[in-house]
Image (tube, rainbow, N blue to C red):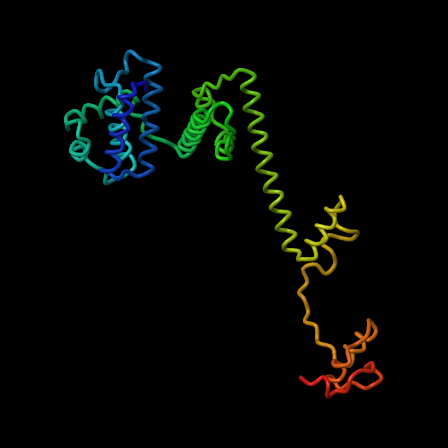
Length: 282
């Protein structure tokens, strides 16, 4: 529905007022938008017969309120009466709302039924439309987000695809396709890296060390299966060695201080010559 910037602002304020005062459900709001879409399709087909509900007012406030009234009545048995909407909207009286409702129904041929498949198709159409508008608002050189790619990848029925009128010149189409491919590649590469890191962490410290050594050498992990044997196995506690055995091991590696032998009360064969035990006290 084409309208001037002032009319668009009036419509936004009117919608905000209606939603705040009526606490309309999300389902009823989407159904009202679908009814408005049907009315717009009829108006494009017969522009002379289907005019605006209020002559001279192209803001769409009357059309929105009438669609909300019909959606609320169609979904709920205990719907708001027209008197409630007359007291809530602040613009139209009761007799005007009754006339709006009758004319709206006549224009859409009383077609209020919406199947589950038709509702899902319309939601997908709205998501694609919003994604395209947001991408256009970010500029020609802005990259597509993951949400944009997800919304645009949903197949649309032919009638909704024709309404988008996506007629891009070849350079723009190629640029859009390249952005989509690069965005998808970046997303899947990030997912793959995260999976590899999580698998390495789950395999244990040995797997991480082997992976780092293999990457530093320019190849995969060191020769052997992945993960390396023993990777991820729980560490077993090591019992401390007896003092004599520990000193024997140290003696093989190098000289053992005499004070250490004195404190451990080791035999002279193990300890090297040194000061008497009294000199090691303290």
